[in-house]
Length: 400
Image (cartoon, helix red, strand yellow):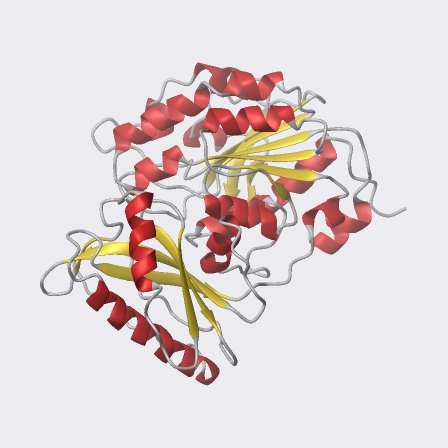
């Protein structure tokens, strides 16, 4: 269902929908135990919920395509990520409430660790504390290039944003992050003749940044990706006729929600405090986006056991999510992040939908293998929103 059709069928109602996204939810079996992180974790609350729900697997973008967090979430918000591409830089900028202008080009940055030969030994610089990132961003902000203004702002841990402000800037730039270690960062390459000048600016910044950071033990280099300008998207609240609220600790996910037109709760805090904030604003919204990050962070570090513990931590939140009394509760993932990969993957993602209408299937555990047998089958993630709205009585009949 596209946003135009959804807008035609959407009907106001007093029902409530909760979308709980477990970042990096899906995984793969451990070679030693032949059990995935979900199969290994002790999750009694999710396993009870799944027996009262209908399940399946979602495809975030397309078969065999490994999604970033941006397209993975935008699909769950009802957008076709192939038609509504959003750059990571914009998401990070909006997530920290940066005043991004329409002519700006924004990029997501990582501080990284380089060895004496300039090769990457740690793409995340040991996940340095945000306080150090703030200090380093101040130093990088002193870099001056003729013809463009550079703005460098901390995000969280090793992450920062780089914003280029000036006339004639273009977003068609390839990333400098090779997404693996043991190699040198890439030069920024323009993807069109129009973006060549912007690419030159960024390469000059990267070169000077390395000089500025040369004395750092860990954060002595930068990696950039997701170059983008502010996109134009149809507003989710206008399309769905739902007041939408977002509750997330990390800035990027707040940025995603803001881009979709949601009202975004202040970031930071803990998963528990964000859930309490959601509860306190129950009367303000019809649709609630609640984000859980820890599973993805653990898997990206290649730590199977830590991801298992994160999933068990999430399971303890399920009773509080159920106590809200939503007419529809979805538990989904934006993508799979197998610990063995220490990165996102293309594998389908477990999904459940609990509805007061009482539709259930025969799935008894919330795992990849079990959800494969669910009544929803394997379907594009962008259809999750219309399924939820239908179950909440928020879609009119199509045609006569």
